[in-house]
Image (cartoon, rainbow, N blue to C red; front, side, top):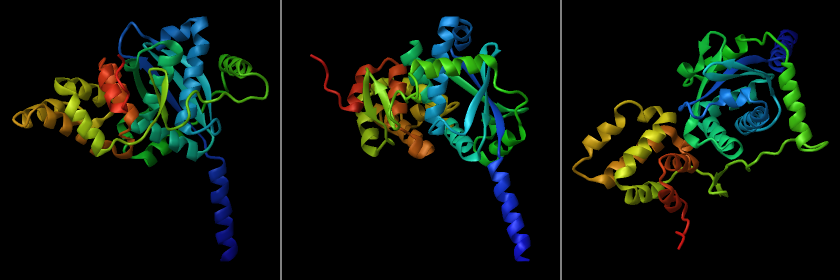
Length: 292
């Protein structure tokens, strides 16, 4: 009996070692003026875009191991990024990052820095075979199974191999591409800030200063927050109309924090403030002294 159990354990461990799967991440832009696909088709822009994608994946997965890019392809109006995962843990980290909006945040930051694309341009979709995973994100185990069942049908594309080599060469011999920002940090006005979950103090500060612009910020936050989708923002305005702007803004950020938990990061709020051109409000949230 013991030998049978040992055999089953060995088979299970072997299965874990050979776990693999494939997913396609679709990248697009919310405005025609900013288009990842157009950048990809431009030979000079293609390398910078590839670097943006690599840095985004490195941030999301937590390193360079456990996955590879197989192909970039035209999925007009989107750019498809076909990914192969060689182990479950990096795939799980990728899915968690995608589900909570961190991947989109990383992509926005790198696209802003390397391609001069504004933060609001990024939209994404994720598929594995015939399954659109965006509809199943609350069930990560199901998403993992869909990815595992979607086995890659090709080797790495020659163009991707060339771009990978070009990226390695750009950093010099025997060096891995560094992450442009330390993990758990974000960039604002060319300065690096530590990222962290939003607190009740942040909620109070936001409500005290944002004024009538709270709705704009809410609509920016709702892109990656299901709890703010649909008529939620208008309903908050109606429900707390008598209490005034402070309470409306306070309840908005409270709803975001309650829904997103530890993924309700300071960087996501700052990104929303930048998107709505509320730079001075972002400076208040970060404790930056106003310029004379």
